[in-house]
Image (tube, rainbow, N blue to C red; front, side, top):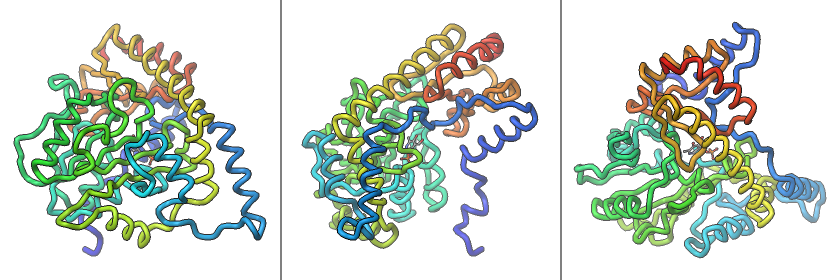
Length: 383
Ligand code: PLP
């Protein structure tokens, strides 16, 4: 065996598998399937982003303004724009720019030795589990169910670990409160563990903290990963970041230095044009545009949740997803809905606790949601 052993065992990534099944169904049904399954946005990028990228592209054709390789941790102008949104909680030197949260989450998984177990919420974004498996790391699942109001409970395990937290969460949409996050930060400090805090949906948080650094002690134990994919429609343009606090150390070594070394060895930075687009997305005008998109997704999500709540138990919150309990199993409902021209995500893809759930996405277009709800209502009795 010459590949990392997990590659011999693991199948394809969840969303890739679902997309294949949708394409098969479209061929069979000879029509388009409505996608309530994917976490991809439907708002186009803001005009100010397109304009900034156009100007940056034009700079590239003039000798005086042309730029070659970007700094591997990001241009100062974009780090300052990100830092501003944190209102003094982090400074630009603690920000490391990347091409999205997924690359960073997986990159961090490979940075820590595989002997360090991972505590992973179940259900959660599949990348935490899949990347841990590819590294060969032991996984301790943290069930998030109706019983604990979908927030991971502090385990009795007192060893050192890599802790994944996501708030607002995918797929349960739950935002952790200050108190809940404080308990995790205290636990991480006590056990000498590291928290990887996935803040991909931070722009959606209404009342809970938007950053883990609002919590006392978090700078001693937490790395935060951000993204513009969901709020500013950068899923295709690709832009994200890791925040590594200056004082965060592991075994006497500053993690910021380790990540800088990692990024300059394995990553050559994000394109100048994209970084100018990101800067515009984080400007006053860009943030206002994002807030309107976020509000549109929120209304879609709440509309879906209110309709589905008439006949089944639904969990929803700040992130644009509805986590729907079904009476049989999520895969079965996925198959039945696909035959009727609607795709959802079977909950099992997010972990064992998702067996009896499906996830619906509020990113979809309103007319598609309305049409899907009539189809879903025909399954009302046996959802
Ligand atoms: N984190 C969570 C919780 C997500 O749901 C997603 C995408 O669906 C990502 C990270 C990936 O974000 P990015 O597009 O920045 O790689």
